Length: 168
Image 1 (cartoon, helix red, strand yellow):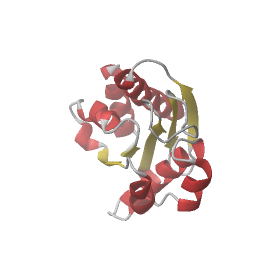
Image 2 (spheres, helix red, strand yellow; image 1 turned 180 degrees about the horizontal axis):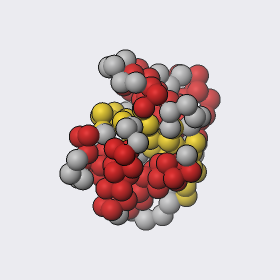
Image 3 (spheres, helix red, strand yellow; image 1 turned 45 degrees about the vertical axis):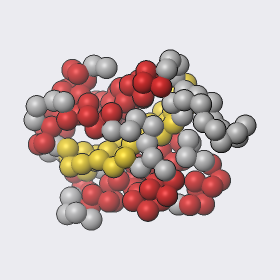
Image 4 (tube, helix red, strand yellow; image 1 turned 135 degrees about the vertical axis):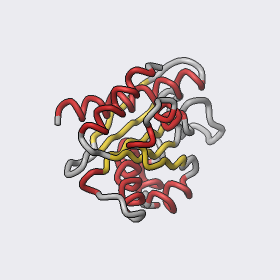
């Protein structure tokens, strides 16, 4: 994973006076760790939530149960809802929604015992949202072992955020 990517993102966020909130599932804290590994991250990173189970996605990030039931946790709709939900969550702490950026990850990193309805291993969705804009997402079909999929998902989330920042 590119340390430089996350260092560049922190500099971009600082330069624009933006704050960052992260919601993770499949990456289990790896995305947050990628930002925290950069000196100066505390200037922009408000915090993160690892909402691994659906109950946490619903209770902490306000992902609707109906959406989780209808689409499953591994869907672009849930990734977008997680990105929107973490922004709302940190707004409750006093963060200004006008300066709050979010990024989220959800997906399947290894075989699950939930049966034939389980999403394929490597299916990952990442989403990001800039102030005043709708959340955008990427659907990824990653390969490798569990750790490789998680690392690639974290990096792709960073790349999505970078793409949105560079476009804005």
